[in-house]
Image (cartoon, rainbow, N blue to C red):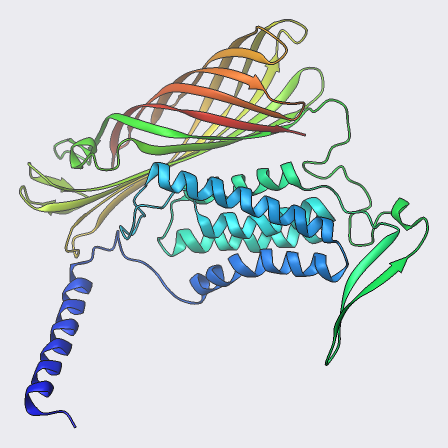
Length: 442
């Protein structure tokens, strides 16, 4: 039995642990709070079940070649994902660790879903993508990842699968595992001519996304991954004094900066360009001035958390003015949709404020380039938006290299600035960014 001294020591330890837990819970701002529940558990489970189910399904139908392709795709995805995690060391939105970018859960789930799609077609792939997308959504919902973490993780997995995976066709010779109550063996089946027929598990045609048999490719998907250095990020609410989020802390600088772009080719040198850029930053700092924001007061000398989010989608209709020349001149116009959100809170919580705006504006874009060789080219570009509430300008320069008929990569550097002016919120943001792009044509 426990003596009095042991009992007293155990009680003190237990009380200290409970007190520490209580203080930790009370000290946690809603900005850093995580969410748990069935949706989060679903993401934890499905990141394993999707690739594991894909592997088990391939082995069950004797598709050992596909299982090997899945394995190579998953290893490639894992190496890239965790290499970027180590390289960027981005703080998670809940502040728990420095390995947020990209999302490992999402890349694992999309490894399985992309393999199912590229190997067996739309009929199986579309539901798998739906499940994988829910995994990504669960990570954002749980406050474990930002949207660009999820976007990058999914893109890495899909591109890795595109590189390794071929459409499935049954072979004349099939070897499948045979499991009995007290035995394990192999079943060998040979059917002449079966290899010429497409398996019933695959789509009837292979012109699905990423498997266009045409000699030239009109469409492309590209992922840009890099870092951004903020020049200023000034915020003002109503008639209150302006403050700069750049002053809140530099521990996350340069921040990650990622975007995804779909180019959908049309006839006669025209195409649609759809670009998603979900930029977010989060900092904690002892402020050196009183701040009034969103009806809340933040006192100088106190530790305050800031959370900034700017999600943007640009959709532009483009015209290729020099289609048969070494020179490139593409111009276009479209619509820009953005969601801006600024949140502040005391580090100990209980003082959360938020101002958010949806912003819609027309846009114009121009890109000039020159092709030095069949593989090497350079480009400069401008994208601008203007409306009563928001105007922005983005300039960039890129050096592009064509790795193969489908694959290309670019080194890109640019500058982005934006001014938002509404009755509730004023925001002036300027930043430089640089990184690399991987593009797949189909």
